[in-house]
Length: 325
Ligand code: ADE
Ligand code: ZN
Image (cartoon, rainbow, N blue to C red; front, top):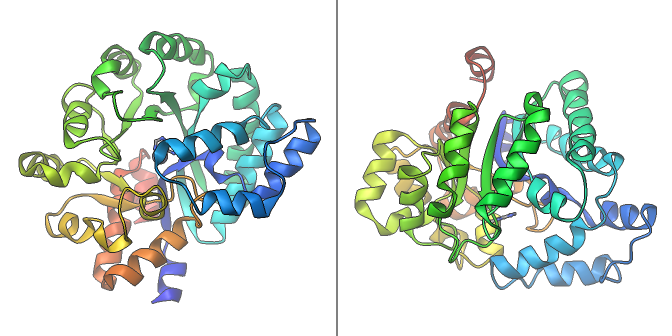
């Protein structure tokens, strides 16, 4: 089964590019940009990564590490390292969140972010036969107006991204806070997704669907608390991007086996398996596949279904979809 999973063509739909920064790149960029990090070495980082209590404790570390991303070269190095790494696991297409809101808040321009990221995306298409797309990620603990202002500025680079997402601290930052942002994104023809039901309740998923009209829910595992919502998700075929190792490390679940994967599969929900922030959570998409397999002993047919779900859920042309199927 391991070699079957390794060889399976993969589509990754939920990964934050900042969450792919391995410690060696982190320290390399800190040195290159003359930044003093509050971490001594890789050992200290590994200790921190092994002891996250919740989403917030992780986001605090992520924010500190992002301080090393300053130049377009930094963004290029980060994305190219990720693409090369997952190409080895046979990822054929990935849709990547970029934390533009956080980077702008730190004074890093959109031009700098896009210049580096797009160069890596183009190289991935040309050299490793991988298609990629960028999703602009907004911080839900910031104001909606700040997100609208950034989206407006990002339109100068409209050809470089396909959609928007919503991330960061979920509790007390419901989707309903961002109705105008998503209305604007829909008007612009952008794809719309949002993190919901990771730490937040099922009502946040319902809001993301009904008020923001998202096309995919990132995480979404708490929909199991509302049978009517579960039915709505099954009937509408709205995909859920599950991130098993992330949920384990951030203590959303006690063990992988507690994830409602079987329930989702039995209810024909379009669930997909993804990595979220792989450098922090002990594994890229293949490690997530292995963790799921160990916990659930899925059949080949289940894996074919999960792969087809991801191809179905991807924001790609019909032609590309046919190539991947
Ligand atoms: N940003 C990066 N990873 C995240 C996650 N799992 N949830 C919310 N925001 C995030
Ligand atoms: Zn995420």
